[in-house]
Amino acid sequence: MAALSITDESIPDLYGRTVIVTGGSSGIGLGAVKIFLEHNARVFNLDIQPPPADLDSAANLTFIQTDISSWPSLAGAFSIITRVHRASVDIAVGNAGVEEDGAYLQQCLRPAPTSEDEWAALMTERLSYRTVAVNLEGTLNFVMLAARVMKGQRDGGSIVLTGSATAYLPEQSIPVYCATKAAITNLVRSLRATLPQHNIAISGVAPSATESATLPPRLAAPLRAAQLPVSTGRHVGLAIAYSATARQSQRVEDYGKDDAAADAEGRWNGRVIHTLGDTFTEVEETLVRTRPQWWGERNTELARAQQRATDLRDTLLGP
Ligand SMILES: NC(=O)c1ccc[n+]([C@@H]2O[C@H](COP(=O)([O-])OP(=O)(O)OC[C@H]3O[C@@H](n4cnc5c(N)ncnc54)[C@H](O)[C@@H]3O)[C@@H](O)[C@H]2O)c1
Image (cartoon, rainbow, N blue to C red; front, side, top):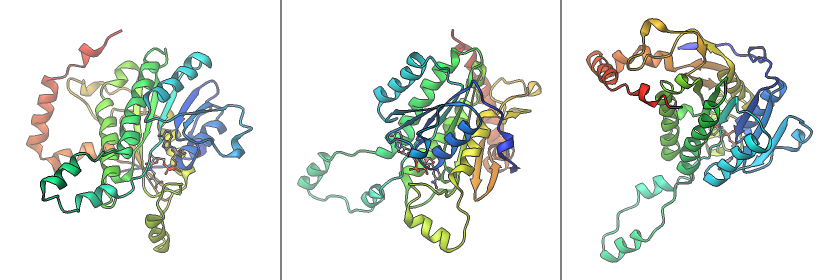
C-alpha cells in the first residue's frame, strides 16, 4: 500500500486548462470543482442541479444542466463545451453517482410467485435500475465522449472516475451500488492499457464514507457515533485533482506485449486512490504486485501468457 501525501501545493497551476466535472454541484464533485477553480482552471459542471449560490460569481465556472444517464443530454453538453465554447477537454472527471433505495435486496428476499397468475403479474412488472443507468451507463458514456474529444487533441487528456471503497469492501445493504462501483474500478483497469497509447490517462478515486448529500443517514450516524473517520468532499476532491495532474515513474502494470523494461515516466494512469478520513492510499499497485499470492502463481502466469497471445491493441491504433 502506498500512502500518499497530497496537499493543495501538490496541484499545479491549471491556467489555460479545461476541466469537466459531472455531479459538481454537491459533495465530492463540488470539492473537486472548487479546487480546480482555485488552481485557475476553466471548469464545466455537468449536473442535474445547479451549484450552490456561493459559486455564482466564479467567472471560470460554467454550469450545464445535464443528466448523464440521458445520452442526448450528455452528448449535448459535450457539444456545447467543444463547439459553442470552443474549449478543449484536458481533464474529465466522471463523478456523478446515486445511491440505491434498497428495493433490489428486498426483491431478492421476497418469496417467488407460485401460481400462473402470480408469475404472469410478475412478468408485466417494469424493472428499472437507476443506479446502473447513472453510475455505470452514464459513466461509460462520459468516458467514451471524453476519450473521443481527447484523442483529437495534441496534448490528449486525463480522465478520473469516482468509484468507491465498496468496490474493494462491499456494503451488504447496497448491492447494486457496489456492483456498479466494482464495474467502474474494472473499467479503469481495462482501459489503463489502451488509452495511454492515445495520450489519454485514466484513473480512479475510491472514497470511503464522505460528507455529502448522498451519504445515507443510516450509514453516517453509526460511523459518527463510533467516532470513525468520515472524509470531507474537499479531501476527496484533492485526490481527484491530484489523479488528474500527477505523474508516475512507471506503469502500474504491464499488459500483453508491453516491454517491461520500457516503463516510461508519464501521466498518472490506471491507479486508484482510496480516501479514508484524512488519508490517501494508492491501492492498485499493491493489488497487482500481490496477484500471484491471491490468484495463484500458475493462474497469473498463464493468464498473462494468454493476454500476450491476444494483445490486439496495435490493431486499434486507428486515425
Ligand atoms: N459520499 C460518500 O460516502 C461516497 C463514498 C464513495 C463513493 N461516493 C461517490 O462519490 C460520487 C459523488 O457523490 P457524493 O457523495 O458527493 O454525493 P452528492 O449527492 O453530494 O453529489 C452527487 C452529485 O451528482 C449529481 N447527480 C446525480 N445524478 C446525476 C445525473 N444523472 N446526472 C448528472 N448529475 C447527477 C447530484 O445532483 C449531485 O450534485 C458518487 O459517484 C458517489 O457514488 C460517495
